[in-house]
Image (spheres, rainbow over the protein chains, first blue to last red):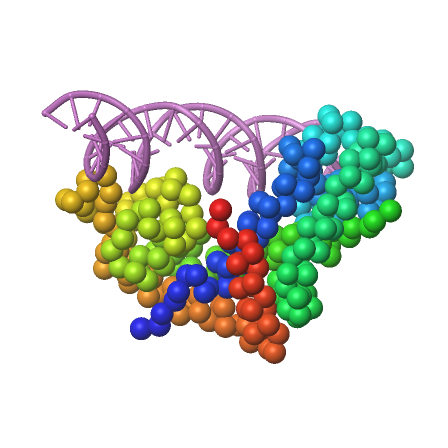
Length: 144
Length: 144
DNA sequence: AATCGACAGTTACCAAAGCAACCATCTTGA
DNA sequence: TCAAGATGGTTGCTTTGGTAACTGTCGATT
């Protein structure tokens, strides 16, 4: 009879690790402790690309449109983001960060990068192979 | 100004990969397509160790006691698991799989192992380094 | 043996996420 | 030009997960 040890089972380990890392990462938000992961993703995507639509944000950050919609609203209520109707196509709206939104982003980014760097340096020589393996697995499991 | 590209950001990538893998893994349950991840973990843990308590299951599978409680009830309603009151300590109950539970487990395991193997062989020479890096990160992010 | 704190497990309540239905607008083609 | 389908985005419903409060039992101290 074939044997399966849960603690060595890859899907389980990935899942566990991913939640532990996300959990720890919340501390990185610092003063903005009540930010959610979807909100962080929208913030990061808009900071990265400037003005864009909700659809594009969802595509880039692998989030379902309802998740994006709710995160956008939350950031809007925080005044970190504004919507502007697109005159060419009034179904979509152009989203962009406000000054306070960009400010918060600039506060978070160095801490986020430091967090990531602390993991990678702890991995030492294993870091590079890990990243390569990640890339391979990402290719194998594309966003559905 | 420091730059952060979400698609290269480690916590994001781990999160994304973990859900994609879990997503695909659901196909492995085969005929038991409506099994949830917590239920699968309870099943696998009980098959691995035989009779044990809910507390012990939670510890081994990194699940909160409420999650375990609900998964146990679901498996019980499926008749895959029975509870037996522990006479020595009536606070806890001894849980164990029934014959149908074990049968389902034996159906799933080979498929689960094949799924894992398909990932690892696709990684080729990157598999071993990945597993090492995973172990390092698990040590760095222990179960809280 | 009575009480108090610890502990196993359940339940109630609330936040988060997915699905599907929906609204408004655009595009296509007869 | 207008009907039909596609598209961007929102909302409602349901499922899932976590927190905290609760129940029942145990162990220890008195």
